[in-house]
Image (cartoon, rainbow, N blue to C red; front, side, top):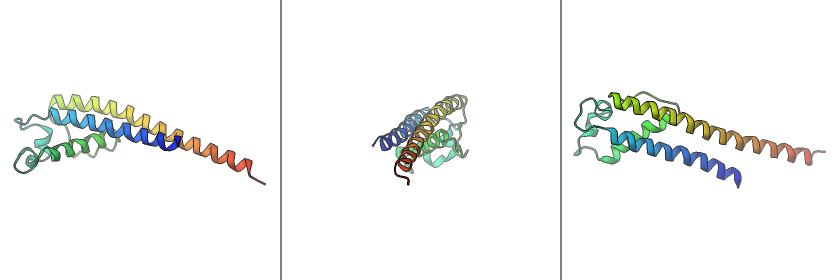
Length: 125
């Protein structure tokens, strides 16, 4: 039970943090600016007749997940100075959250291995 809860907690923290980072990245988008990250990535996303806010948020969430997970494909990139500053802060937050989640997962596996060892030693012939 504790194992499943620890895994759920680590995943929840990563997804919730990605959601918050995506919301702020989405709000930083300047709809009038040609240099905005969204306009540079896909100009059609800026047209409300072609795509809605759910498409823009999905792109921002994609950016946040790739930033937090340290994958960083580089297809969605900040273009303005303020966006770059925000991306730097998001990378630092992402590194902390990723380390937290990785530490929790490692602790779960260590606990599982130690229980397996105790079980094997108890019932070995």
